[in-house]
Length: 335
Image (cartoon, rainbow, N blue to C red; front, side, top):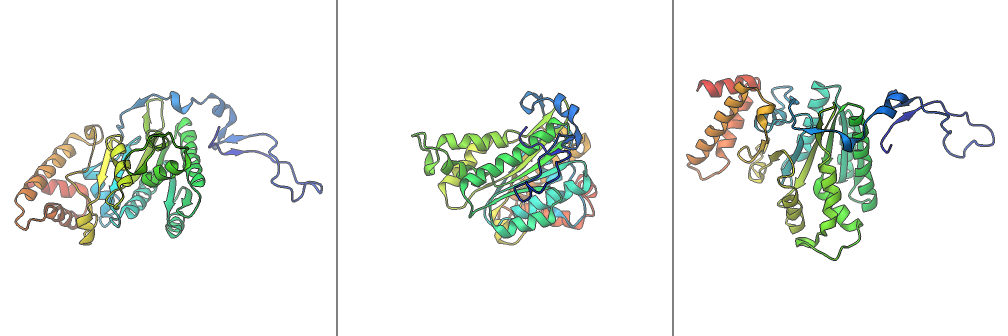
């Protein structure tokens, strides 16, 4: 199947065939690191039963890595989560994606990490390849849209084949907006146009990509963390976000005001969250998080400076002074 890694003996290259391409495979011995007989019995991805994510992926590693700490509290990620990071320009989304990938590699070595970089800058692709322990599929902004679309398909096919084998996979996509733009250019026009020049048919391939995230009852999961761009000055980007808003079961919103003031992580805590978070967090933790949200709402109401992010900034400062999330949440409950 598309996306399988096949290993086996190859025919030695003779004098007549030397320099005429790769050595031919004689027979397959391993498919994705497993026996061929297992690969023949595995189910198809489309036939797997989808259930709610119920196993949290804890991202907290060190006290100084604030991005992952705040995600664990405000918008926890579970195996099979369909997570959308909504970010304006220069809000730190790339750093958050790298921190998530590093935390998963450190805390869950068994989770296979696949990264798809669509329309990114070449230097960011190099940085990702050097820093992330996983497979990186990339197509930079200066490449043809056909290559960008094919790259996303290859990354998704690879992730699906691993899930069919019962493995847990994290697929990071940066970004969903540029992927939709690429399909809008590639696909032939349907004769219908939405705001900003978007063809409705061009939204289906990115939706199929994002919708592939699932927690499978038979075993295995595909967790997708994708980014969507907003406040870029383009009506097309806003339309793409509106089309994907509500399709995920976790959203992390980044705040432009906080980013401009160089307050990181620039997370809008009041707008971020996870659906059915009670399946991921313990009852005690859930109660503490709800108390934190009520405290945040009260701080924003009582803000005397007129700054809507003052409450979030105060909570982030307090979180930075704590040694871990557990002690931070306990301090919230005690006071």
